Image (cartoon, rainbow, N blue to C red; front, side, top):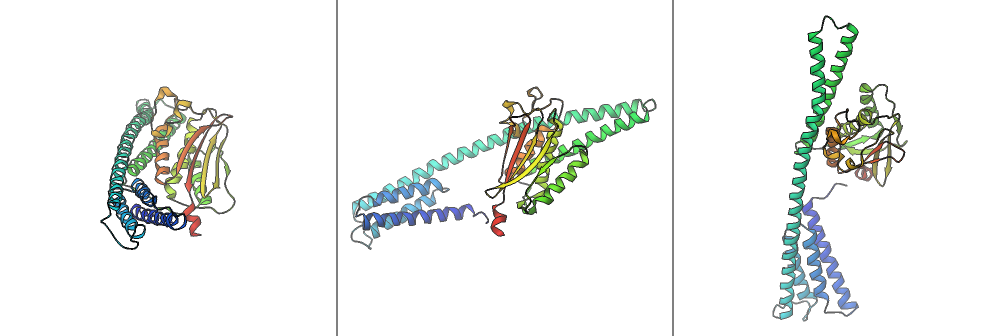
Length: 354
């Protein structure tokens, strides 16, 4: 089921609240014979609509409809409009004041939240720039040093050593390519330049593609797989989710010092596909768990092994992509050692279509 536009949600919410308020008022007057609280019911309806909708108009319209309903259906003479009674005029004024004040307050709160979100986004950009500076420096320095050695000592360097040096250059160049791809992905998504195109993706096919690509760079690294036997369809941008899984697997290989076991598990709970990447390495410093996805990386903080790289950018990319999919991502240390990354994707749309 596709998400309703915000404006339509506001309209439906307003209509439902008015219907409920009218029904409760009928119950109070005709069943419980309580006349004096009908106006209070509609005042509360105005408050709810003003609080839960955007802008001023929905609350003002609710106040207007509520005033007319009270005047027409719940005030003598019934089923006639009479604006000469002071109580009716006072009720109308109260409802309009409540709607305006509540709308002003909620608009101010929402604006403050927007300003806070913008500030957090700018802070994330600054953190990402620091991560980029750190992560790019090491492979570039290595490539420069290795190529300089080859040029200056080409004749004296044995062929076997040359191949080793060239292999290191190739590895660092591949690392740089992946970092640049990650950086492009995260910046484009944050700036809204990439529109996610979610298509039905079979989980088995996604995992197979991830393993094939991962094995090209880490052919000797074994991965314990645990995925559902039944066919699971998930609405996603498969290329970006592949990038998330490969980033998390690569981070484990590169940064989880002492790791001997790496696993990828997928299971379904309450129409959500849960992905878990778990290792038994060195784990993550407790002070870094809360900010690990913000791209904030300082060598002295020892995120994993301080000699490794590409943790800042890669994890920021993962968080950004999962957020763009309306999912959630989390990390924790295992009780028996190592770390566990977990993210979820909503598969409710696919299940409803089946």
